[in-house]
Length: 371
Image (cartoon, rainbow, N blue to C red):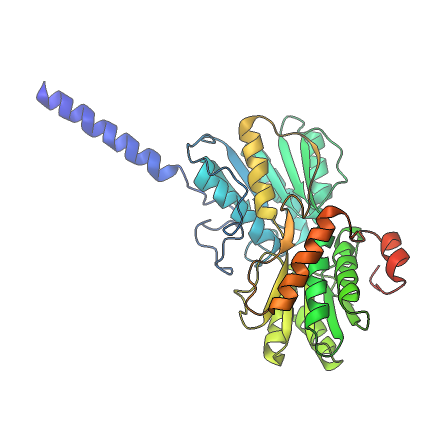
């Protein structure tokens, strides 16, 4: 009897060990790498201000969530990486399984989508408006599957959740910082791609800079890519040659070239989407943050709770969905105080940040050139 009991106990311990080893396995097929070994900035985008519940009860056990990046890749130090950080937090705290597939070109969107559909993932998250067509086609073809897309609100289907951000509010704050900190009254802006969604970064940045410094000049460049750091660096160097001493990028991995150019020239850069100060601590003065990590985490939690709905879910400054980075080492006390004051005015409705060409031009004239 003692031998039998010992054998049963040993078998039970072996089974428990196997479960613990496989619970957080997020190494996928295709181009996905081991999710625990990202080579980006190393900072968890959600570590400073997590909106999740912190529930580690494993309520998401058996739930699988797939993330499809745009062409910037999961280690872009920006948009895609922040999305993956949100999923990693959901793995740690909610017990889900997750994986990502990177898109080297736009031709990868559909195959990556089909991979997760074939593997019957419970939720597929598309990072960026460039995946809108692939997401819509998949959602129409598979109405029983659940999808979410970041920065696109064009898909009106019950099984698609559109995660939107008032990123013009964050870029307004970044522009306000640049307007106060510039010594040349000349700053730059590098955009990844000109369209209605991305131009909102420009409207906010230019508006904030002008409100802080009416004498400001904003040089503007459209890199037409989110994955071309060489072009980003070229654009930044052109702005520097023409007198800019602070440059903001809203360009994903292209923006890494902007930060590099600023670092080499000894001027300030402004990051985007996540706190990019770790990339160049003496160069990145602040970042216009979109808390994509929080939005992804909240979406997964809603899926687990059974409350996830289709339609548009918007994250703004008041809800903590956008902000500037908490890293303030390079900012003066005067700038920090002024930004906190204008932040309160935005939340209270005293300052309205333009989110369209019409709104911007009504307040500031024909200053923004990329639309």
